[in-house]
Length: 441
Image 1 (cartoon, one colour):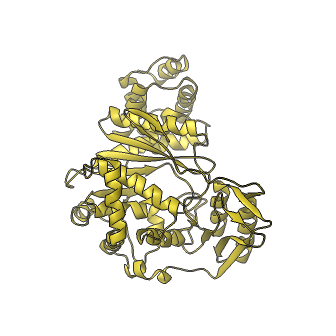
Image 2 (cartoon, rainbow, N blue to C red):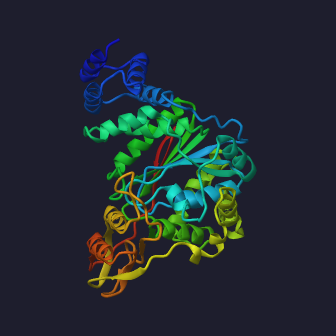
């Protein structure tokens, strides 16, 4: 078998066999197939596409390229959640504790952030002493005893995906449904989950800007999950504005704590209840999403979700006193409002620009080596559909550098589009994708 023949075959729009896909993934992972041939192959796939069987085979080959995390020692159905990203996406910090408090094991492998703000691990490190470093045996023990643990992603999880993504990133072949879906699903499957709930974002702050594309991506991933025996559901959610109000690590953790107290933003609470309901159904803890939602609402009202967050922090070496006294989190030297330039209704908040403003302040990483300032970020006060008066605060900037604060202020003012006519608030949940098909709301 030669890589040249596979490139030509796909260039001509023919279907690849399972053996050919395995040959390519194995050879490239081992360094036996050069980048220039794989670049040509990716471009052929980009234009000629892959069918559902080819996409599933590519996913399985990437799973088999490295370690597979065996979670069979953990009791119960392990349900994982994946978000395709966004701005102010704090869901894991709320979702993990409430789902665990319902008795569903949450064995979460998370990463650090690159871009707008930190990843889940960076946010959790706002708790002094919190660590994701632990042997896999301890990770499993924590899940069995506490029903929740959050660990760092192993370097050898789907290594073929890491190599392929880096190459796609510099060859303009990222934006292909099969390649995106197999990239996401290979890591989820290798992480050992029995079932998967996907939060697929759509809108200006999402990877998929168009709603139809987001539904198509969710369908592709659900099909892969079904093909490899994982019960998978996709929830399409709005990212035309940041989720919640807080953007920035310690600020987002505080907002998560507020949400676990039942005092969080309506959109963030709604998203966590929706995703969590599907997780409970897949785990067999409820027969319907409505029944599951009632369970989760009771967990928040009773304080069990907040108690579970305390347990998680303590079990992983963090100071749980921060949960009850959020003034202990790091705070910056500059806290300044951003004032509206005119009266009107908020028509648009460019989520990407709010993310860039947070990055300018130091809340995210521009390179893997960048150090995050956990204390900085932005808290929004107005969302789409809200009315604002001139000189009223639309946001507050938390900064440690006056020059960066001024730069972020300019970006935030440009991100807000204020108009005279009344604007209707957007719906958060756009639809659900299951193996039975698509249901739009």
